[in-house]
Length: 122
Image (cartoon, rainbow, N blue to C red; front, side, top):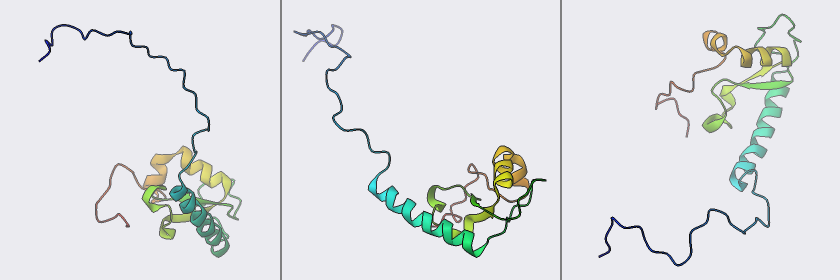
């Protein structure tokens, strides 16, 4: 057995540099996530068609007609859950994202820190 108090004797000193270079760039998303995003785009578009008016109505410059979706529970595991989407105009959507405490108070968003195991949709 080797004595642990002495450093390992090497023939060549270790180097942190590498001569290896990537031939191809890293993928921005996995095939599974890309498939989920494709499904999400259809759900988001359908949600806007079914609910064309802004459901948030929190900003004085509300444009009345929705052009985006607000995720009340974040994207993550709720990405394809249509019940967590609200339609929003740009000023209201921006306002809610800039004021998370108000969004929580108005139930237009939920805290990602308070997760109950029975709330998760699988």
